[in-house]
Image 1: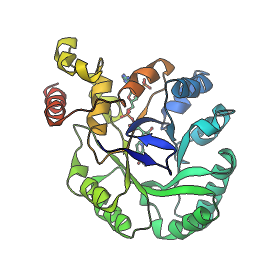
Image 2: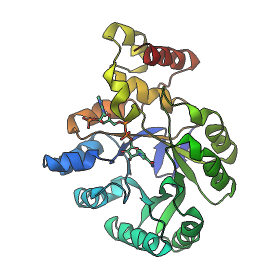
Image 3: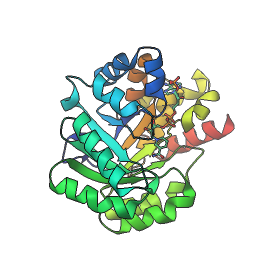
Image 4: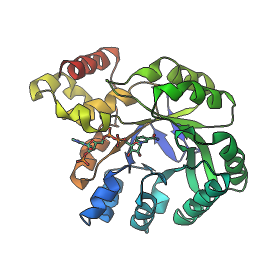
Length: 268
Ligand SMILES: NC(=O)c1ccc[n+]([C@@H]2O[C@H](COP(=O)([O-])OP(=O)(O)OC[C@H]3O[C@@H](n4cnc5c(N)ncnc54)[C@H](OP(=O)(O)O)[C@@H]3O)[C@@H](O)[C@H]2O)c1
């Protein structure tokens, strides 16, 4: 796999990142939010994704990053139909993350025509590093392709796992053609794919690739596609971060190993 980076060299990719949807608030409910973020950083996780859609996650993350902000690449979002509220969301994020949001994404493409000029102006002022767009639904991939083709965004965030491969049709080839960064959401199928883990004997052929658990196999499956840069997985459990981060280290799977993981996932 060629050497690539995200954010003007701040993040070497491909790499596992941490998602905060529901799980950071779950960790906070147990009083473990700071421990979770510290464990992520200790495990080498350098990309953390959040959104105003995720309740109090942005603020929890900001508080937990006290003293660690320089070690992580923050991927936040605007999520509102209102241009005025979009600007307010960006302003809050800039305050929370020390004057810079490394990547600001338009969540679910909501009002993207209104938010894009505001984000471009913020990028010109040095408040935003990269601009991106996200959507979870294949029904919206036509519109996602439209914003990609404007040449005005740097990244997309889309779901990709053995049960959901719709991005292989247009989004991944287009991102590759345009040179866009690709962040994956739902690499473990929101936990659904973890309900039917293969046996240790079934995972044994993946051992030479550093794989000891099913979560690692699924993370490496996505990241081994050369068009992918970051796989965002979420957990509320600090003890899982080192395991998950290890799914983002070489050696990468070839076509045979990817096909094997697909067979394991669909046979479960
Ligand atoms: N833009 C969008 O529309 C959108 C939509 C969805 C998600 N996202 C982003 O993508 C991130 C990831 O998506 P996701 O939350 O669906 O993630 P996921 O990684 O596919 O699934 C997370 C689930 O897997 C479990 N899990 C994590 N590590 C595990 C392990 N090693 N062994 C067993 N179970 C494990 C977690 O439970 P525990 O907490 O118990 O470990 C959690 O229930 C989100 O947090 C968010 O940042 C964006």
